[in-house]
Length: 277
Image (cartoon, rainbow, N blue to C red; front, side, top):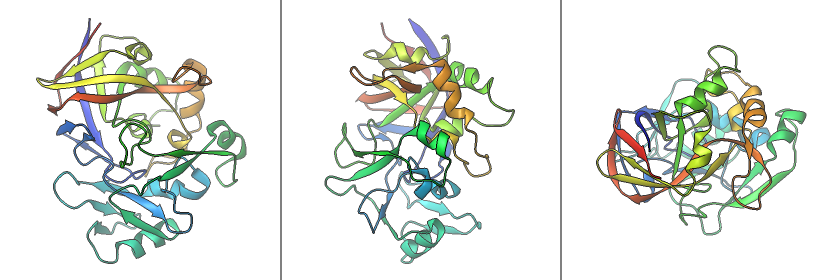
C-alpha cells in the first residue's frame, strides 16, 4: 500500500486566475472550499474565459485571486490594486485588465462551454496566433460548476521533481500545474497513472476516488505572474508521460490525476495519505 503525506494545499478561487497556498481546507463534493467558485464570462461569445485559449486569455494569469471559502474573493490586479468580488465596478476593472468585456459570475450558465486550444499547436504557432481549439462543456462530473472535469487535481512531489529536473532553475512546477493537493509519497514519478480506480484516504476523514490522469493543455507553458513563459513545461511531460487519459482517447502529455470526493473531510498540511489497493 502506498502511503505519504500532504505537503501543499492550494485553491484557485477564480477559474484561470492565479491562486493561493492554504494551510488547511474543508473538502467536499464540490472540491476544496473556495476553489473555482467564480469565473469570468466573455460577454461577446457567452463562453467562460479560460487560459486554455492563450491567444485570447493568457492575461488571466496576471491576476491573483485569494479567499472565497467564507468571505468575498479578493482579486489583485497587475498594478497591485486589490478588488473585492463584491465591488460594484468589478466587471469594469476586470474587463480593462484582460482587454475584453467580461462579467464575474458565481455559477456556470446552463450549457456553459470553454475553448481549449490544441496545446501542441500553441507550441508550434506561438501565443498570438489563433490555432484549432476544442469546445467542451463545463461540469461533466459536477454540473453547474466551473470544473473542466473533476473537483480535485492531485500530483506527487516525485512527478513534480522529475519534471523540474528538465526545466531551468526557478521555472516553477507547482504553480504551473495548478494542483489542489501535492502529495509526498513513496512512489516513482507519474505513479498517479496507476492510481486510477483506487481510493485515496487523506487525513482522518477525506476519501477520494481517482478518475484519470490529468491531460495537460498549454496553460503550464504560460507566464504565471512573475514566472516567465516556459514551453518545456509541456514538452517534458510529452516526452516522459504521454498516456491515454481515458479509454478511447489519444495519448496526451499528463501530469497528476483527477479525483472526485467519496467522503468529505477537513485536510491540513502534513496529513497522512494512503492509496488503496
